[in-house]
Image (cartoon, rainbow, N blue to C red; front, side):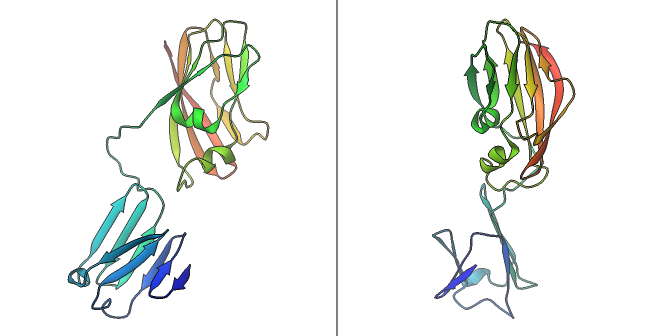
Length: 195
């Protein structure tokens, strides 16, 4: 965090503690190049600004302003954006973080059994803004081809695979991935269904 003139600039979470009221002009912040100014009519009231990128909260009683760039997690109905990745390789392959996070892998390979390798946990967390321990996501692996697929941990064994990781021909399987740290996570096999 650095102070630049009348502005506080930061790329990390922090709390500003103020003595008494915030200035007559209100609160002015510069976050990653964006200027946010809240007028003085709110300086004695709690207020909150929410976005998909984080949260700004001012507690008037404590005189504290809190900023975070971590995602806001709410327990409500959500509508995730999913992208289908179509794969074909008789030799097997390593999924990319983007393919995994897209939510649906559709494998149309038509020969023998193949091994599919997970991307590293490090690659996955690099693609999730504001990730934190216990961040989790689902993905579906569809096998409409003519082979048996086995999902495997990455070469660094950053993923712990829990349950049956084999997807038979003409079946699909739902998995949930849970991030434990920047280099460790778990993949749970949730259930199999006909595709």
